[in-house]
Image (cartoon, rainbow, N blue to C red; front, top):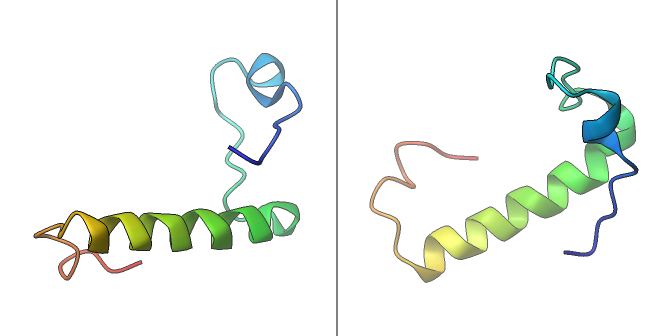
Length: 53
């Protein structure tokens, strides 16, 4: 994976700090959604239409 997360887990062991809405992570989220979309199409995910990205 091309992303290095600088000890995010060690700083937030219980994973209570939700970073999804953090603008600093927006480019990572965009890339990961694109990869998920590609994989869903590649494997013909039957529920991809029910749960759009």
